[in-house]
Image (cartoon, rainbow, N blue to C red; front, side, top):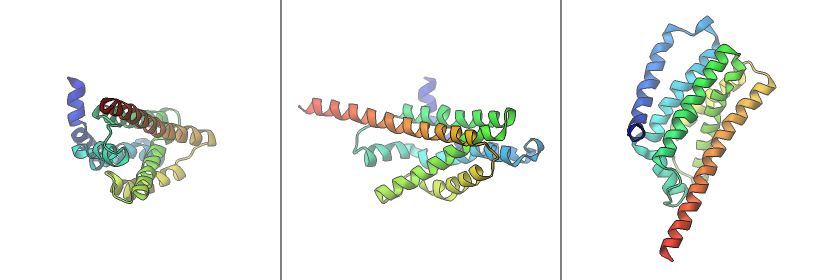
Length: 193
């Protein structure tokens, strides 16, 4: 029951939370730390991007129809898991790591945004069309992600770990969708045989 409620309403929650987090910003970041500010901003920026991307289940339907030819490669449950623990959870963990351990350990939030933005751009180039989330990816994600990755002080280890986390999440999503599409195609072929 809770899962179905979240599947139906998480995008509205993203809009509300994204705006609320931005409205809390004037209260300040401890010590005026720019790196911590950038990692904090990753959450509301991502949440507002999610509204463009997922309002009306647009992205899931687009991917299933345009990328996978009508096969259900992503379910509403998949989208919920990807975006709540996979994005909101990573961004929250990155903020805590940056605050309690050091700013470089929060870079996963910046890399997640940059990789996602580049993925939207790559999909648009490949399909030669708009995809849900492309506008905020190009106008906000890529510039913000680049700026954050370049300006947040980090060791090479921190940069690599953060990039591996971001790439790993995106690769896991792609592999899951490919696997689900393959299974759905096999089932459809078996049903028509």
